[in-house]
Every structure is written in structure tokens, then in C-alpha cells.
Amino acid sequence: MQEFLTQAMPFLAMALAVVAGLVLSWLVRKIVLRLNRSKPELRETSRVARLPLRLSLCLIAVRIALATSTGDLEWRHGLDHLLLIALIASLAWLAVAMLLIIEAMVLTRYRVDVADNRRARRLRTQVILARRIGVALIVVVALGSMMLTFPAIQALGAGLLASAGVISIVAGLAAQTSLVNVFAGIQLAFTDAIRVDDVVVVQKEWGRIEEITLTYVVVHIWDDRRLILPSTYFTTTPFENWTRRQSEVMGTVEFDLDWRAPVEAMRGELKKVLAETPLWDKRVGILQITDATAGFVRVRILVSAADSASLFDLRCLIREELVLFLQQDHPTALPHVRLETLPSAVGSAAFDAGTESKRPGKDAATGEHPRHADPQDSQLFTGSIEAIQRSKAFSGPGEDVFEDRDNAIASQN
Image (cartoon, rainbow, N blue to C red; front, side, top):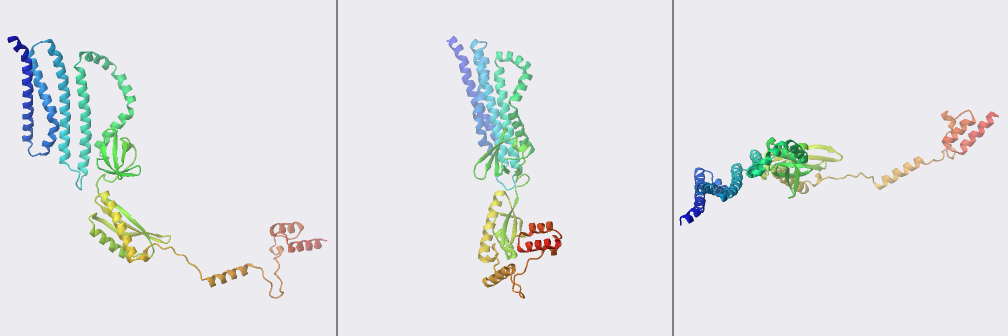
């Protein structure tokens, strides 16, 4: 009986240790919640740490019970090593859960569904990236700690440290692109170039920053597509950030109208439309003529809104209302194309007059057609047969040219 109790003692001690760990974890959670009663969000977020906390406390209690009840038995060392590896994993799990709780509490405290959310979006971006970096470090440290519990790996560590320089160079060359993206992601997080929920225009696409990771950025485009870009894109390529300092933006609505456009009436209609819509933030609302060329008058309306989405809806509303206003009340202001034509009788008379002026007529005194002007009158072709030939080259053959030629030959003889 004594021998049976001796052999069963370690198992009883471990069972009691598990119970003690469960009770202790329950007490710790109750104490934490009691001390933070003013933070109701902690009750919801603390559930993610409940299981890793219980597991960690139970493993610690079991190891203590095993060390005090078994002495120096052979099977204890293997079980203790296994419990140590499980304890390292559970502690890493608990640390990751704590980071998630901290992240959730910070993000709950700073809301992004308000009008001025620039600070909240900046903090949200930095907290999310910091949490991801922390999780990566915890996993690496936990894996390294597990490996160091094996004696063979400890002996191998000296050789690895001796060749760490060569390995680091090779790894750096192999992962050059990935490391560049990682450093670019860290730069984006802490330089405030972009934040989660920022409105940007990248590659001629309008959208919002949906997610920022260490290596890439996800842009939620207006038509529900996702544009995934490497982090280096935002550190090496110019892009538009519409909410860098503030979410308020301005936009324009343009009309090409006739010169008879009622500018003052359009200003009054614009004020009426802006006064009746909540999309306008009451900062800017003006109407101006910015150009008057090519038969049209360009009317430009400049308005402002609280954010880009409201601005788009406001511009569409103004365009629709003013087009309807012009159609119903001022149809003469709509674009017109003017063509000026002459009456048929006047046009025929002008055509006949122009034709007669170009047609060679008869001389009123002689009744004969007028002769062509003598090339010699211009003093360009005179004095010789060569001059007559030059005259022929310019004026073409005709009876006047040949007559001039005969006269020139007779004068020489």
C-alpha cells in the first residue's frame, strides 16, 4: 500500500496542480476585471487570453508539483522537458493574446467613425503594425527558446555563430526585396505618409487604404475591387492623399453654356440647392465664369464637403439640379450652334456677279474681246527672240505671243 501511494503521489500532485492553476487563473481574471471596471470593452477582449492563461498557470503548477514529488526519477526528465516546451508555447500564446487585448482597447478608445478621425486613423495604423511586429518577434523568440532546450542544438549554436557573418550576407541577398518592403512598411507606419482609411488616388484609381502590412498595402477601390501594392510603391512613387491633413475637400462642376446664360439666376439656384442639402459643409460655394471662347461661356462652380464621398454626391446633385433649372426656366442658355446663311435671291445674284466679273467680256466700243496684255508692257520680256521665248514659257502659247515673235523678227531684219 505504501508503495502504491508512493507511485501515485506524483499523479495526485499534478492533478492538484491543475486544479490550483484553474482556480488561480479564474482569480486573476476576476481581479483584472474588477480593477478595470471603468473599461467595459476589457470584458469582451479579455476572453482571447482566458485559455492561454489557464494553460500557462496549469503547466507552471504541474512542473512545480512534479519537481517536488518525484525527486530524481528517470522518466521525470523527459516529461519535464516536454512540459517546458509546452510552457514556452503557452507563454508565447499568452503574450500574443495580451497584444491583441491592448490593440483592441486602444482601437476602441479612438474611434474612426467620426468627422475628424485623422489622429485615430494614424494611431490605428501604428498600433496594428506594432502588434504585427510584436507577434513576429514573440514567435521567433519562442521558437528559438524551444530549440535551445535541446542539448544538441546548444552545441550546434557555437558553429552557427561562427558562420553567422556569411549566413547573414547570403540571407540578406536572398531576401533583399522582402527586406526593402519590410522597412518600407515600417516607414509608412511611423512617418504618417498614409493611414488606414485614408482616401488616395493611385495608378489613376480612387480608393481608401484598407490595410497596411509590413510588405504590402491594400487599397479598397470605389467599385469594391482591391488594389494590392508593395510598400515600396508608396515610398518611391508619387500619389495623391486626399486626407493627409484633413478630410475636407473641394471640387468643381463645369458647364459650357450659351452667351445668354443667366449667371445671376444660376447663382441664386446654386445657393438654394446648397442650403437644402446636408452634403455641403458651408465652407465654399461660388459660381464664376472662367472662360468665354469658341462660342461658349464656361461656368465653373466650386463647392466643398466634409469628405470625398460627400463631395462626389454633392457635385452630382448640383449638376442635376442646374441642368433641370436651365431646361425648364432658361432654355436659351443651353449650348447653341449658329450658322449664318444668305437668302436664295441675294445669293444667286452675288454668284452671277462674281461669275461675270471673272469671265472675259467684249469691249463696249469695238465689240471684240479684249486682247491679253503685252508682256513687253511689264518690261520683263523685251529686245530679243530669247525674251519672247521667256515670255512664252511664262504665259503659254497664244496668238499674242506668236504675233510678238513675228514683230520682233521683222524689226531685226
